[in-house]
Length: 492
Ligand code: MN
Ligand code: ZN
Image 1: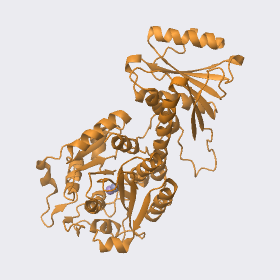
Image 2 (image 1 turned 90 degrees about the vertical axis):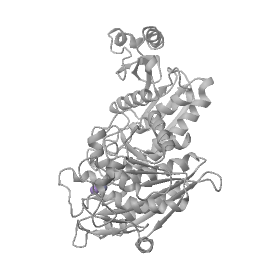
Image 3 (image 1 turned 180 degrees about the horizontal axis):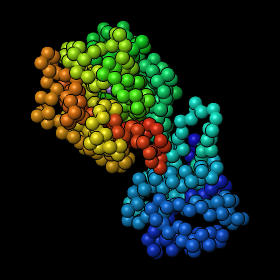
Image 4 (image 1 turned 90 degrees about the horizontal axis):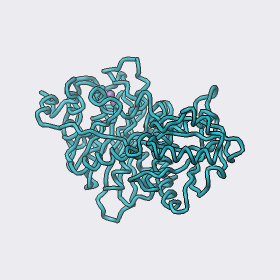
């Protein structure tokens, strides 16, 4: 996909469609209407008929004859001017571009609106994110009925005064979007494409392409490190586990790194505590946390973020077999703590536990883990909000703010000690499942046993796979986390 910014008029720009935004407020709407009719007289009947009033995310297409070099104009409403935010712009941009794609357009021009409270850089950033991310599709395996008609070229139209800022915003947005797209591709890929070894080789290839360091620990090394959680979950699988380490050294030498940890279960059958068949195919995305961490490293390297960032991904399948872990088994982790396996489907916390132990060696500024961890998080927060827990108040507030800015919102759940008794075990230090009540919190409390530094846990079980998607989140795995983390790190 290509995004550029240019100084041009709506009538002189060459494209398959020009997207123009309008607010609904009387005075402003009338002025947009007047200027549209004066430039493009053929739009008058459509506007007279009331097909576009500026209502939020409404969309209307008009054909303009010889008045402009582009044959059609797509008008998109922004709603009330006082309420326009970056998120309004992302959605409005995506809505216009999706309409253009449906009409078979492959190149569109987008007029930069001026929005009170947002700089041209912010506006260009939001419009670019909405446009680029809306045109993502995972169709590489389709050989028939493949819908190739997607918009691949975007030109933002601006004026001389805003050009430099618009360019800066559009470029940064494109760099972040590249990371989101990597995360979506990895999470959408089936387990016969992405399993631990191929996840590691994908990380290696991305490291070479974008310029971050990647090393991979194999089963021998994982065994030497006594990562009993990762090995225990892996026991039922014919494919060995991997532990992927990624480094973006953008900050000064000696700067404490931010460590990101992603759950990399490339397929979760539930193991011996096997899941029901219906919907199990979604479990190819049980490595979305890993995908988000890899995508974040891609974006950070792509943008040249001036921070030291480490990405850690423990990865295995969770399979049932004659050699699989069974309920009642007791395993021990890298830090020597032990856990009773109550339910082999509560496997994510077992592999994360070892990764969190490993993170200690970096003496991190903070550790943030991302995991499709609990169904209980869906019950609590649905597909809209990521569950957040942790020991590091400052980082949780950072993530809350970044969540508001990027609209990848997070909500804190408490790690009160009263919940701890739910994971008490009679035979080991803790057990891996606390039962039905407060299932997201008991998973968080389990992880807390393995942290020795400021820490935040993000449960993305719901936000990783919103069933209907959204204007700039096509159906499938969402790539959630990349934009959130990059924004938080930029504003650290
Ligand atoms: Mn599971
Ligand atoms: Zn899982």
